[in-house]
Image (cartoon, rainbow, N blue to C red; front, side, top):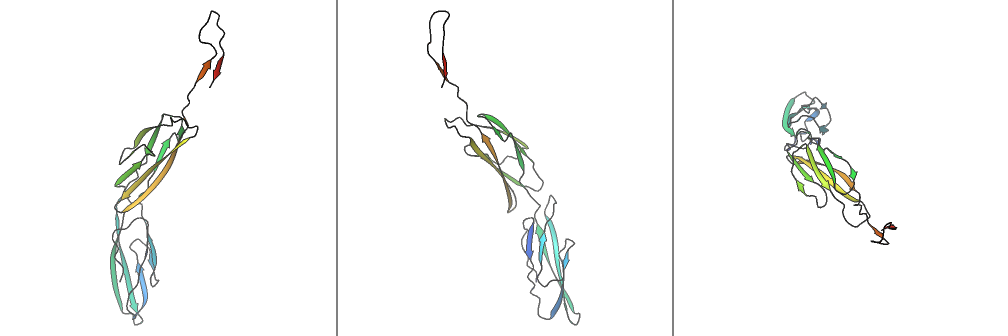
Length: 193
């Protein structure tokens, strides 16, 4: 018999466990996707690029040495292929940079789950264009790195992609003067701090 898995993720590698009786000596497998095999218990990779689930019928014809035959079939459903894909522009900038996130929105995806990085929130936006303002207004001289993650799902299948945005520290100019008032003309020395 052929195992009957539920609708599976795409791509899906399966091992067909041939439990035919000992009388059978030859086997002809048809995986329903144009590929066949004469192995006893073959491995097969189901994959497709359709935007919807695809259902295949796997067929095993077992034959005896006397050419007696019988057939067993099972259906196998394969979810649509999904892939998380997006771009960020710019990928780096200064404090208060507006970053445009472009969701490539490939077919077959039923749910989008975004995490915009530490302190930037999360949502399930299906928008093609998302804009967020990223900050680094601390007193630290170090860049702040935000990791934006998109996880897409289709049934029980998921795929994730993470991209980073580097935000340079906020520049805070400051200076002092040696005098703040006096007679005209006033000679002032400015010192950067």
